[in-house]
Image (tube, rainbow, N blue to C red; front, side, top):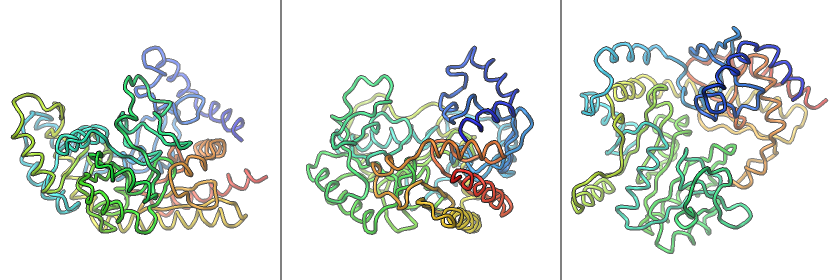
Length: 439
């Protein structure tokens, strides 16, 4: 299937092939951002237009998009409210390095949705994660952080550490890092409370940075009581707890942590929060904000090293306000989650009918299947469960028949533009693919 579908892809996409060859003259690996070649394809698919859940490529093919920019377009491509905001606000100026009146309303909306009172804007969630680690180290006086094995927090160097094989080491793929990151980062397995407690009891960890559900190595759900233990242990040891909800914003209006009533010291999220325009946020509790203010008052003049010129721009604030008001509402989420449940059931039926040893997991409007019978308990188990040849075969098969899923794993999103017809289309093609894989 891999070989056949690769040949079919080449036959279907001569214009994308030509564009790829031409782009290679000027772009590293032939693309504006090198992840764009990580789709397991002979060459990248060049997209001319994205609207709702429909992509149109350079060769004129249309696709139903369940990837949605790997969450960046979680509310659909170019939704009307976002395009209207862009047209209106662009004529009034994009950035001034001064606050706009929208900042006042956005702050109120963020506290209402997520329960934290103090916020800052960055360009990406990676930037936001770097910032919260810096603030946590500053106010605690501790140098170390803790992450979970096979976590994903963007391109933050400190988090590129793994504990596979029982020994903590830097991730092999990390480019150009001169420091030994293991001197600053502790790694334990998700859902391992004794290991977490042992790592925190030393009292040298400034911050635990965690997704409340691991999402980039398949989906790993928290075991019953794990997040409660995480919250209790960080509080007892004076460790700042920050949840990176960039991928789990699909869970509820206030993210996953708020939906299960766990209150962190800080939150980070990006990707869809400005409708696809680069923007991210990090927020803190009142206590952490007070400690930051005291720290700033105690130090001398000079740059903090936290923040960039285009962060908090007029256009970011206007778009964030639009997304919070128009899309981060209970009715929108209820509709998305209802349809995601339909997708989950359809995938489960396809798996169960022939007795395949696979499973499907859903978190809010985010659905994913893995080629193992039971959900993995931690990042290491999840990393061992990934079946790259089957995943790649499924991705190619779906793409050649007009359906896009996330390339790095088997993740699908439902957005306000997704319909039951789109879900049925996916299930029908997925079933045909699975049937052929068994023969």
